[in-house]
Amino acid sequence: MTEATQLREDICRIAKSIFDRGLTSGASGNISARLSDGTVLVTPTGHSMGFLDPARISHIAQDGRLLSGDAPTKEVPLHAAFYDTRAGTGAVVHLHSTHSVALSMLPDTDPDNVLPPLTAYGIMRLGKVQLLPFFLPGDPAMGDAVRGLAGRRSAVLLANHGPVVAGKDLWAAAYAMEELEETAKLALLTRGLQPKMLNPEQVRQLVTKFDVDWD
Image (cartoon, rainbow, N blue to C red; front, side, top):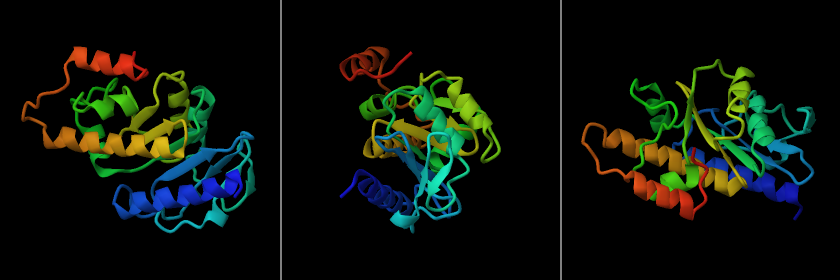
């Protein structure tokens, strides 16, 4: 099996799992993965993540030209911003997951560090998650905002829209995205209940031991 064939099948498998568990709905959300030649496979526009066809996955060149497959998601500039600014990025996942979107709309959410330090894996897999402003869907300015972070964040949360996570490969990006959504859910469930969070020393130990990007 070729690299591209394997990635096409993995994208569809992960997308269906995400859809079946209600982490994104309708035709929302998109996934991309970079091939070793620098080109990118990305889910096509207007397609439900629960019913993707590997043969119709969009294959785009480094300059954004469509090489084969259906027309790509309009969020290609958002994905490209992570590939261009974070060395080692092999995949990007963007969802409209409910709890993350809800957290993005609350007035006391910290824009520099959206997720409270509730669990070890929330720190290990995500580092700090940056809250970005609201943009119209498909607006290239979303990509500009990610580029403005100069590679300092592997995950961002678009206000009133949804999270975007970059990972070293497709599975790492998917696992990190799920961790983001679960941590957002925990944050909402424990809101106002004064939960015992990880203290600064515990966070420091995690950051040091697992080499987490944290600034």
